[in-house]
Image 1: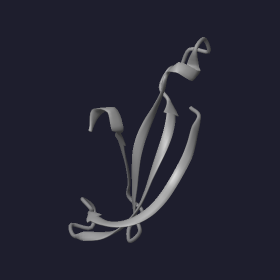
Image 2: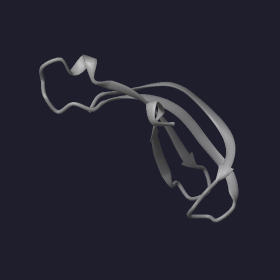
Image 3: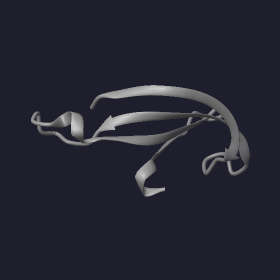
Image 4: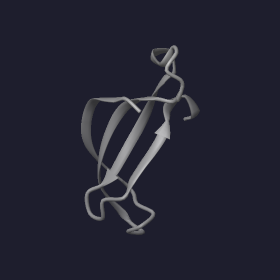
Length: 66
């Protein structure tokens, strides 16, 4: 899967693992969803990626599904 990171910001969000609001690194990544070699460039979708600074738990949310 290809991905490119466009930005990184730290926000305070709820962490399921820690059970409280903690600082999170937040970024947007483009991910290729197709496994076929043909026309992969047309299957890229933006994902919001959050990583808890305290425990390292990482979550991905497809932006078109937000």
